[in-house]
Length: 147
Figure 1: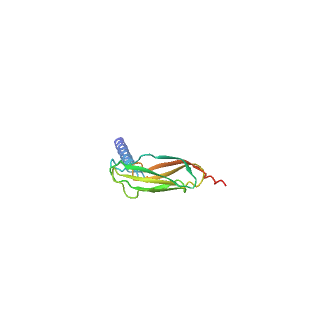
Figure 2 (figure 1 turned 45 degrees about the vertical axis):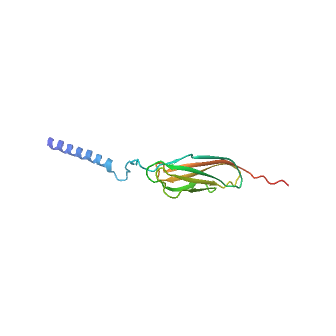
Figure 3 (figure 1 turned 60 degrees about the vertical axis):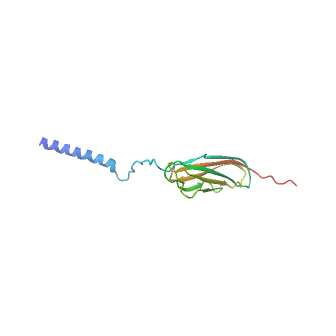
């Protein structure tokens, strides 16, 4: 009887151990670790912040950020979203080949006087899927003509 109890206990322990190992590698709802793709596109901007300095009120100010695909696969900009309605982004729409260059142009409408610090978030299939670009400056009010 003792042998039967010991054998059953060993069998149950073995099954529990085997089941625990199987669950850690195939538990439903878990996400497997991401495998890094060494050939993945990689977006590298020449600079990520542009300081306009003083600009006149009512005159839109634009800056074109240039980037390079430093990966081996084509880079695709899926979107460029401004942080507010006062900034309008434009960007290279076609895929950028490895080693190729593209642009993201940010235009600020400069309607209100005062300092500004605006963002454009660039989304792509690159290693850094989101890159935030900054435009800064100070809008000076236009002086009324003297009479």
